[in-house]
Length: 302
Image (tube, rainbow, N blue to C red; front, side, top):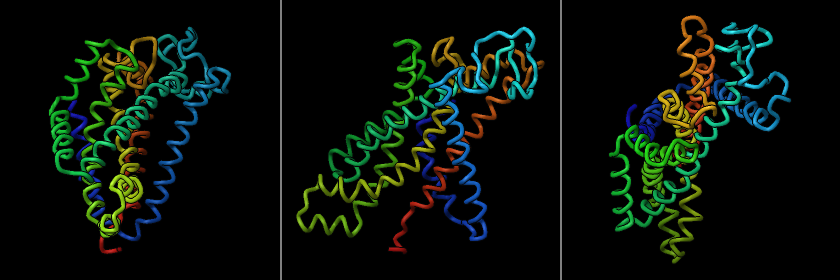
């Protein structure tokens, strides 16, 4: 696994390159894809949340650990749309149950990264000077640590738990988002309306809150989607390697890790969770990329 924090940080470069050429004829197609991506995310989050709240009382959901001797390794059917696992467990119910942890980790880590990393980037990009130097030093040091080694170290020292997984992944997201916010803040801080407020004697803290932050927030929201997708993939990788939350708690990565032992006789146990991860991450990346393009304000248009 590569340094995921650096992967998040360079996302800005990929998004900027994607803005280079967008033919007008592609507008409708992109709007349709954007709508489909949003619909998929709403559906996935909605089903997972409803399954979290109502559990087996929700139509179509069953106990993800329930054994069904009559459906061992059975393929997809009308009653079991994702098929059954090694002991007849309902794979669809497992995916819904595993989505609780996978999505919760993704959203939690992103929220922490935005809160702490965003604040660091704002202060560094606006106040500059010593503050900027300290923040840049922290960012560079944190980004220089290999992601996998950091996660293994934290999990080994503190133990495998949901809180420790979130802590480890947050340490990867914070410096990456701080770098992105700092770069965006540097651009906004040099604009005329910010300089005018400074000349008028407005307090710098007020300028940061009222002028800089609202103009940085769209970019931060866009990268929040991209970061969430990356974190979901990383958490799935950790689960696959046995470094995430302990059994019997399910995650999407853990379902795939368990199902790979029967890949030759029950490929659906791996295929459907993998497809859900793929479509969810793809949708997050597409929505984030499109929001970044729509929120982009070019100097030529001012």
